[in-house]
Image (cartoon, rainbow, N blue to C red; front, side, top):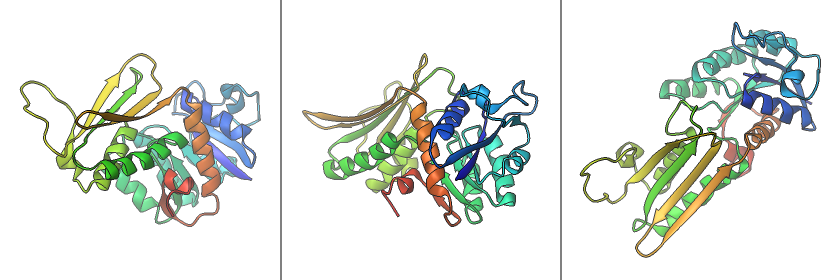
Length: 270
């Protein structure tokens, strides 16, 4: 049995993860956390998630939640600064983490990499099984199509999303750059305006849309002369991310310290 604490248990994503953990065989929902001062502190995490009381209350202290719940690991989709604080406590407690937090700066990513030398971590900007299959497909397509096809990434999310481009769009761009032997810092184009001239050979465009309540749409467009190919993933519910995160937690149990991705979880890479 894998005992899991959900960081940010009161948010939409946290509640979805709590439900997924509660409904998954082999997983026990061990507790949850919220920000200091939140009105949700002390509430039963099961009640918050809509599954009924389970006798586990939401705490402000991550370390206390892990210890009180005798947790094996945490699932964290909060915010970069909060995730890094939780990560430091997890290292001290020698507990694993599944991290789906987006908007991470390079310094945050370096912290995660250092922590992975001591504890097992699954870190992915998108825990959806479908998106991670898409990552594999677009790289294969890029290799097959070659330089004569222009690459554009279009992502759309709800109006409240704070970071742009999305972590998933950046992951797609990074993997496509790697697959086509490009430096993303040089090839990536994040905005176009004015008399920019003809599109340069080898560019990877990354375009952002923010509107309404879109949960998450990602398209990779390969444009050639006389045809175009589009590979699209649309999330219709946050449940897909929650189910992927719980799947990652099950997979991570008993693993050696290291930095793993959803590609590892799904068996696409060793």
